[in-house]
Length: 198
Image (tube, rainbow, N blue to C red; front, side, top):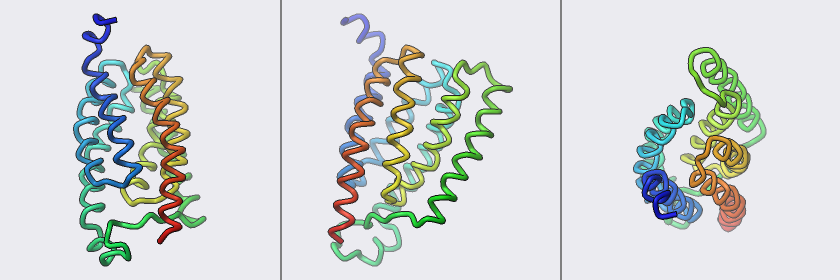
């Protein structure tokens, strides 16, 4: 057991940062984005080493959106004109049209990423990798904008990811994503409750 921990310390550390991050995310703490910067930097290597090329490129996107998310949560629209609670940017919901647009963008990204992985890489999981990556792109943008539906996207992404990571032998990451699935459910209801208080 100790040998396995020593051999996998890097992935374990990245997974632990993911656990810390989800709690900060649920509680809408801007510090989440700084933890995310470190975690995604580590996962760039983990995914590259495991052949999850779409997930690896997604980490680069996460890195950029983490900077955007932190700035928006800290200063966005002058903190939404110093929102009613003066606490932070309020949680919002997507209306029907933007939600359908988000789903369409996810579908287009899925097809493009799948074709790239299938024909230009040696990925062993192009379908699953493309699916989770496409949804994650949209979910992360929603998270950065504090849109409630980000949690619904994450629940789907996390569930599918568990199976993919078990298949590839990334057990600490599979355990992290099983935990993230449960926490995403809690996150949805916590944000919904917070939104109803405003």
